[in-house]
Amino acid sequence: MPAILSIIVSNANSELVFEGGGHRRALTLNRHPRVRSFRLRVDPRDGRVLLSLPQRASLTKAERWAESQRDWVEAQLADLPMPRPILPGGTLPYRGTDLRIDHRPEHPRKPALSGDSIRVGGPQDAVSARLVRWLKDEARHTLTEESARYALAAGVTIGRISIGDARSRWGSCASCGNIRYSWRLIMAPPEVLSATVAHEVAHRVHMHHGPEFHAVVADLFGREPKAERRWLRDHGAALYWVGTSS
Image (cartoon, rainbow, N blue to C red; front, top):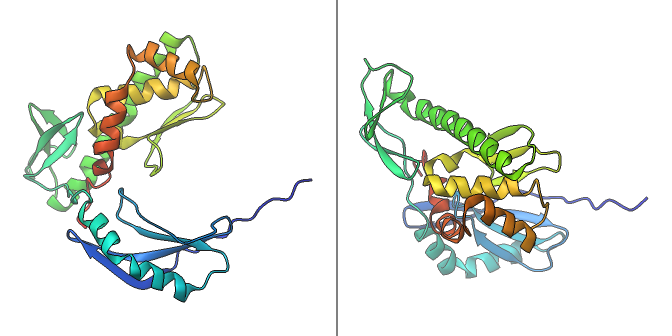
């Protein structure tokens, strides 16, 4: 029986703190048996400052090295998207546009579209949670409907459709046919959402990213979704800052 490699990761925060562009983040240390040298990055989705280091590396040396990279880290923090809290009178991104949040206590508590606004009632401190739940419901409905449409066009079956908040990918398709999407796609332009669905459904035909797979995606979507992939690269990280205040 082949040996199973055990990966041990430590998420303990060090005492180093970085600041830039209104963002303040402590250094997070990740030990990994496959890392051979210090690696530093800033996650654009939540601003975490992550330092990966070898399993037996000195913490003192690692933190000293991270400190030497302070200018770079703080420049990266300054370039992050700004937090975008969901507040009465503010805006909510939805299908590529911004809806004005029309909150009045006497409105029905269930959010409802009204022209270029979204109406929501109830206590003010519940507005953000209600609108996030509404976005998730909209995402689940739209992504399920789009997946069924593309599956019919591709002549394939799909399994369960679910939504989550993965930080590493916008969608994933399992070999059994279950597909999972990021609910935040509902905030992107409709064609970006559709291109992501075409991509995942195409995996029901080819479970790889070779030329045959991309040909299926283009056939389903009607063209190569280069512009949509570029939109996610350029603007996708900002969607993770919706609903945050820091």
